[in-house]
Image (cartoon, rainbow, N blue to C red; front, side, top):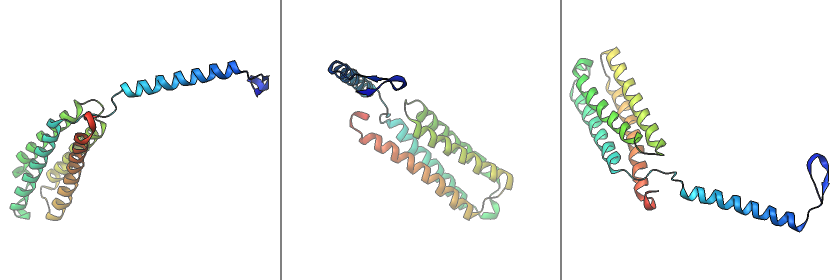
Length: 163
């Protein structure tokens, strides 16, 4: 005997147990079958991995050029083309990450990378200078994001069957 609706006591028969067991088994099988058919992880995309490397290269080139210029001579106008070059690489990286299904982590990191780069550029434009200490911090922040993206892509490559 077990309590039913509104506290009424209903007899628990073998038949009810059998029906309950079958229903639970069918629901479990339906759930597991649906999960097996679903693709929750993006597969490895060599284009995205290549684009992460290209973006890293553009960021590195930008900061190398910045450091070759004396700190007092780093007016924004002299670096505007470099900002554009890196922005194009980052936009291409974001596009590459967006075109894969279930690729939220890479999409979010690409958006963050673009937002950080726009913030760095706006600050340089406003101040019309760029201190070495700030350049070190900014470059490290961008490197960390790109390292994280490279790590995500590397882990996708190691997953069996790209899942």
